Image (cartoon, rainbow, N blue to C red; front, side, top):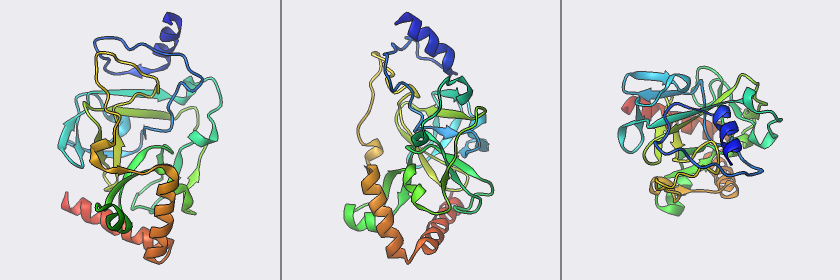
Length: 239
């Protein structure tokens, strides 16, 4: 166990560690590369927009539900430190320029939860806001999986509780309390693994079905994207 812990500590750079070092558990599926943010993602901080790569523990980020909240610590994992090929299921999705009002290409981890506003969700769940995994966006013809280069770094921002952080463009992304290592164990801390923040969290197949029906309801992909872009812009103006 000590040897494993040493190897993992060398692999992962954590800007702020808990006072009690976590106990690592061996696993064939050690790294959780499906969740996390890529460095060029721009979030709203108390000091203005800032790329994820420049966010540190102690920074105050705008959240969807609780105003500005303090980042407790940050994990950053460079793909160059991973000695095996990354499976395609973990490759990030490329969001091309303009698709959601972004001025440059954006990348998002496939299982990263994003909050969407859905007319059908409001009818079916009584709340227009639902969390879906980003891999659902691969159904859009403009979105593609891209093999991460060794220079790529995935970032995990952690708060005292799950929080929904807001991007400069109005997108809303979940930062949960888990680690990049999916078997993180911190006995002295409680983990909240329930439904984050009270929103419905849809598994992939249900989320994909909701998106398919929402696109049909809106009159096609172009109309669906235009509606979502308009909502993002309205939220950004209101903020």
